[in-house]
Image (cartoon, rainbow, N blue to C red; front, side, top):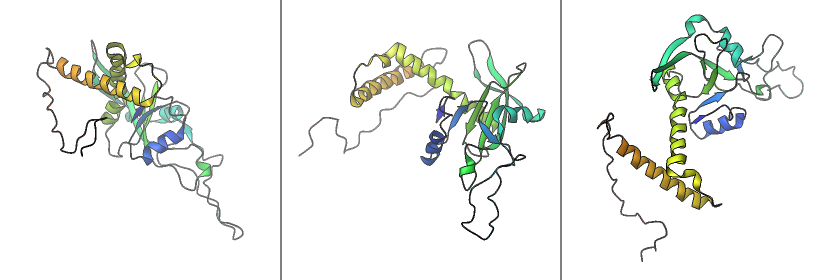
Length: 231
């Protein structure tokens, strides 16, 4: 699941994705609070022997999370890598990136255990005074930084597809108010877009770089939507 920084402000959104079993790479703002690698909130207070045993995590003056920007600026010089992710119109797109395993700190003082570790990916181009983009990701802990960058940058491709769906195939022309009607309209637009993309791939310079689609076999139990049930 890919999303921009507009969704980062809702921690429940990311938590729900994890509960659904979906890995994500989502943009976050520079102000998001994180625990740097190897650190985290303090354990609950020791039980005095009276009342309920304390269960909530703690912070003190010395144990505080950092903002994503502060964490990025604290990384050593050898943490940064020059990585290219795709060919642009006139040049290879590349930039400087760093990645670190962190723990989100959002309201963990109301929790009895810390948030799980995840990746913080940072883009800081050469010559910029500060990092320009940040992402949180639940890709596996052994994922390479090149894979993190490639996945994060896939949003450009999705946005380009969405733009062409609206401009060329009329995805934004639907004026109804029902979900079913919109679903039909969207499904037809996406099917047409898939067909046109396959046809376009056969035209030079792409040539025959991808195999033609093969029609899937129709299962015996298939019944077109709206048709009468068999007797």
